[in-house]
View (tube, rainbow, N blue to C red):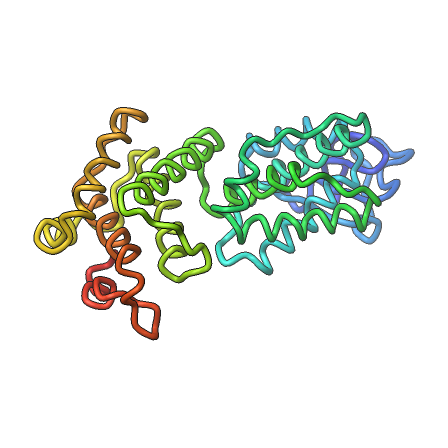
Length: 295
């Protein structure tokens, strides 16, 4: 390893067999200069980012923060890779490092973290919030500081971004859209959600990806309109509710919901409404009959 740039005593950019990497270790750059050889045994961690823009972001970030924050963020990312059900985007390392730095600064200065989306994050992204709680424990174990629940909520959003690869602004809109859809379905059918039920969990997971596709203007996983036409014949109430949802989304977000996407919504709404008739497997009649149609 050859030193290319020194950021502080503990962090340097190195040339490692022709690849630019960020090396972190206690005192690895102390008394050294550009062009010096760096003993790999003295390095605690080496970070590689294939995206030059992300590497530049990381460079800017580590100039002003303790190297330990980067190592803590890396430990959190490793935990996420072990325990998350979805692949983790490498870019979350930078987002987490930045957030840890800001969160700890807020804690030190006594600035309250106001997270207006905390209730929705805990409700809609339970798995990600649980992982964020584990991230809080990692931070506490290293620094003896327990960040607030509001900060945990923001860490959970970074995890959602890392697993769903959704833009932060779209994620905020997704939460708003999901809330609106749940309210519309609840009001239309007089439902009180059983948030521990199989049907609710499936519906919520569908809405997470549905809202992402709609906001990104991506096509549905299948453009088959079978379920949409099935709704006309067998589930007119679910279809009517879906049409209202589609009209609201177009008016509020300027996004058109395709008939294929509406079909999947009909499927999940009908499954939810018919939940009391579910069999022992947790499948309602509509789910069991139409499972092969890919809702």
